[in-house]
Image: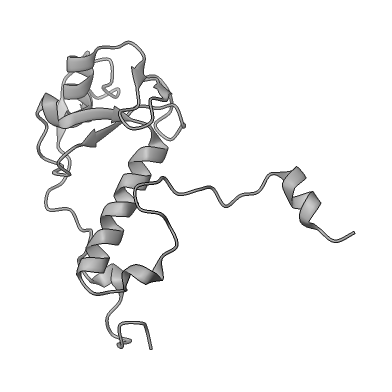
Length: 149
C-alpha cells in the first residue's frame, strides 16, 4: 500500500508533470546549432538568434555557459521557458540556464504539482524550497574520514 492508500495509483501514471505541449523542431540548414540534416529545436534557435553566439550566463546562478559544449555538460546552454510552456518560444520567454538549475526547476515544478494533487504533504520532503538539490556523492576524502578505523 502506498502513501496515498492505493496500489493501483502510482505517481508516474498520475499525469502530473506531463507537458501540455511538446518542443518543436524546425529545419534551418546552415544554422550553427543545426544537426547534419539541418534540424534543431525551435527554442534553441530563437534564443541563439536573440542572444548571439558568445558565451552566456545562467539566468539563475550566473555560471558561464557555452553553446558548443555537449548538451549534458555542466557548462552547456540549456534553454528555459520562464512561463513553463514548451511551445511559447518568444524571445522574452526564453533564458539560458545551466543544467543544474534547469533540472532543479523541473523537479520543484513536479514536486509542487504532486503536492497540489494530494500525493504527499509538505512535511514529506526535507529539501528547502527554491534551492538546487545538493549532490549526494561524497568526495573520497570525506568518505574516508567517516569510515571507522
